[in-house]
Structure formats: C-alpha cells, structure tokens
Image 1: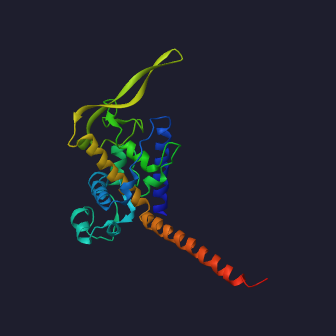
Image 2: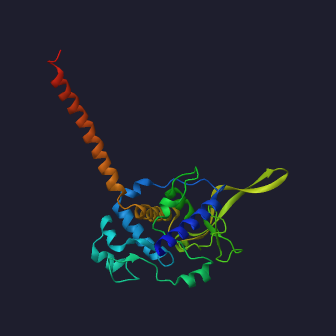
Image 3: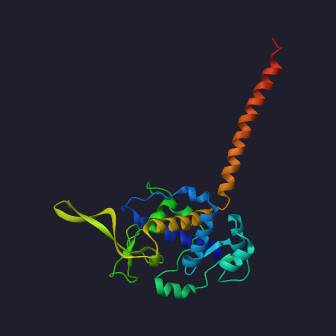
Length: 254
C-alpha cells in the first residue's frame, strides 16, 4: 500500500510538471540508438547513481538487475552501491523524506518510471522531454535554488549537472502581440561560464543518462522487441509453409 501511494504521488508530481511545460519550447529528439548501446547504458547508470540517487530513489529497480546491461556483480558493488551493501536491494535514496520536503518543498519523486509516465503532449516521447529538460537549465537569481528551466518554469530541482554543463542563458527576441512587447525564446543559448565538458560532450552524457532512465522503466524492452521480430519472421515463414501444404492437399481434389 505504501509503494502504491508513493507511485501515485510521483505520478501526480510528474503530471504537474507536464502541465507546467505546456506552451514551452519544442522538445529536442533523444538519440534513440543509445538504448542499444551497453556502454551508454552503463555510463547512464553511473551518472544516475552519482547525480540523481542522492535525492531521487528508484524503488522499483534492484541493483542486481544492472547485470542486464553488462555489469558484473563486483562492478555493481564496487562502483554503484553507496546506500546499501546488498546487491539484491532496491535503489532507494538515503535522504530522510521529511528533510527533503523541508529543503525542496516536496519529496523528490521516484524516477523508476519517469520516462514512461511523461505524457507526450504532442511534442515527443518521455525520453525527448527528459533529454530537453536536462539541457534547458539557466541561472535565475529570483529562484530559491538559483536556477530555472525553460521546459519546466519555476522548477524546484536545482541544476545538479551544472558543473558539467557550465552556466548558460537563453536568448530571447522581442515579439509584439496585442500592442505589447513580449520576449520569446529563440531556441538559442549563450554560454556564460564554461563547464567541465563541451556542449557536445555534455549532450552525450545527458543522452546516456536518459537512455538509462528509459531502460529502467522497462528493462525487458529491447529483448521484447527482438523476440517480436523473430516471432513475426516465424509467422511469415509458417504462412508460406501452410499455404503450400494446403495447395498440395487440395491439388487432386476436383
């Protein structure tokens, strides 16, 4: 019952985020080929553990399931487990929920199904949203965290990857509507302070992280797709064999 309640709370939080992003900038396309790259998924798991699992849990994913992306149990224990010493445990955060609510105004939602639960809203997939969201932060001193986001205005989560990306500001263009000048986001960004990575390298890291989030929501997705392809091939061959058997059976019948 507690897990069901936690899941409902997370979905409500994500729904509010979807509402907040309506009318925002178009979503960039997530490079879907990352889902089939073991190295990308492994790097995404490392990024998730180091940057996301401090506040967000993934309470429906067990550490030992990471063997499905090519990691050994020793690698999982030695590099990815900081809040527990049992490889069969779920990926829970060590932070006290009460403290999280005091610091952020709400308990950070569980991220196990974040990619699947994000509604497309006619702009793209959940992976497209996350890929754009994590690349749309900018400094805003009027906010408590010092950060804002073009996709999710007034977001409560700070930019946890800012040391990698650096600081940027969105470029606006004045647009007249109903006799009033309104700033409109051009889709361009201006680098204010450099980060540890170039923009291309940062985008690649974000793509790896989003690939892991997408995989975590449905770990068996790739296997299911491969199995489905083989099933369709088998059915196609079976139809041909059945057709020929039928023709052979009825050929001497007047």
